[in-house]
Amino acid sequence: MNVYDSEKIAGLLASRGYRITRRPSEADLVVVNTCAIREKAEQKVFSYLGRLAGLKRRRADMLVAVGGCVAQQQGDRIPARQPCVDIVFGTQAIGRLPALVERAEAGFGPLTDTGPAEGIEMITGAAAGGLDAGISRFVTVMRGCDNYCTYCVVPFVRGREVSRSPEAVVAEVRELVADGAREVTLLGQNVNSYGRKEGLCSFARLLARVNAVDGLARIRFTTSHPKDLSDELIAAFGSLDKLCRHLHLPVQSGSDAVLKRMNRGYTRQHYLARVERIRAACPGIALSTDIIVGFPGETEEDFRQTLELIREVEYDSLFAFKYSDRPDAPARRFSRKVAEEEKKRRLKAVLDTQEHITRRKNRQCVGRIETVLVEGVSRRNAAAGAGAARMQWTGRTSENRIVNFSREEGAAVAPPQTGQLVDVLIEKAFAHSLWGRAPAVRPVKPRPKGDACYAA
Ligand code: SAH
Ligand code: SF4
Image (cartoon, rainbow, N blue to C red; front, top):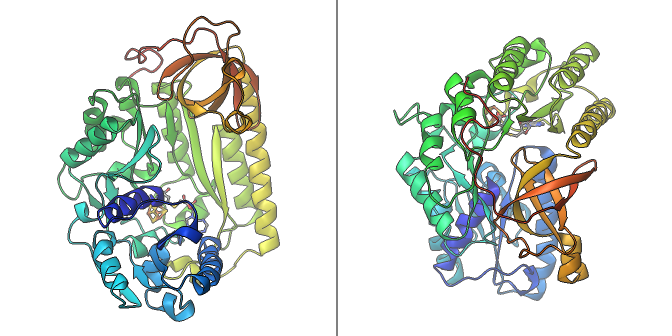
């Protein structure tokens, strides 16, 4: 979401004549887009601002603007703590940033705007002239969250849930495709409640409308809340040819007692039944998840149940986090906090368990032909400046596995192009990626409907 917002910010500032530079030392304006989801992310903001303060001592005319969730949460306290900051703009003030910058350029400040948006389109919308426009882009379909999981700061800093109209979403996807995008990831904290409040179409219907956009090759989305994962959405994996075979379904914990205190609204059994259903509808679909270790009161037995669930589901990948107290989130007042050392140990156990599973799953890919959406020349190869004969490319499978590959020696066909779908024969598996060769570098047609998935 912050990447998407940064694109939007860059697009808005282009209207005031600003262009992107990657070097803060040559910038007239530095925009720091912040995350407050865990304490560590918040600490990073202030250490970065400390470095900018040093820079500003040499470049007094440079402006510093801080946006995002930390800005929303701390407002005026940011310039009070770090005087190099000229502008603080909250999560719903993005649309007003150009006006704030204009005032700061005129010498006013520090300025703070943590007020509400005047409408969802004020804080979303296509990003003309934004950051590096890759082939894979984000599109926000809804903002905020009404779920109030007890550990989470999102409802307090991003506000109540609100959805964009399907027309606005489809129009933005079309604009991005016209700008070179081949893949879009639709974003929302809980896409399954998309449009419910506003009486818009269901998320599955929205996916169908995006699926019809010409020139788009792939659709991904995140995040689907397990309590609301509908049969209609599961069926979409079987009927929409552009929808990738990957579902991110954050479980957070494998223990019912912990899930209850987290206010997640589902049980372990409900979650496992959903997984079974999605796998029946779409065999081979990749599943990923988020895990929090060391939630207040998490016992050794609760944690064992989480490890057991990870082994049972056999995720393709996961993100694991040590629980962190957040301002406003009720769990901060929960007793029986887990010691930092113990959280570290549990985090390592989760990551080790998953690594074992990922390696095994990656090995199973060897010998298969995978369709890869080419994202570009691989980084190592770009740096080495290798000749065309030894070039390596990088991309992802529908299941979101990273594949690095080279061309079959003496291949008569043209080298693969960024944005092309190519068939790659997988020859080696590593912990976090696959290696292969493109036997015949030819564009492949999108998978015919129902080829590998079956409607539920
Ligand atoms: N809306 C998504 C997740 C958004 S936050 C969902 O409901 O699944 C992304 C992830 O950060 C969460 O899934 C959770 O695993 C983690 N997270 C959120 N708050 C946290 C906290 N206080 N401490 C540690 N991890 C947290
Ligand atoms: Fe946070 Fe829960 Fe909302 Fe996800 S669903 S953003 S974890 S409150």
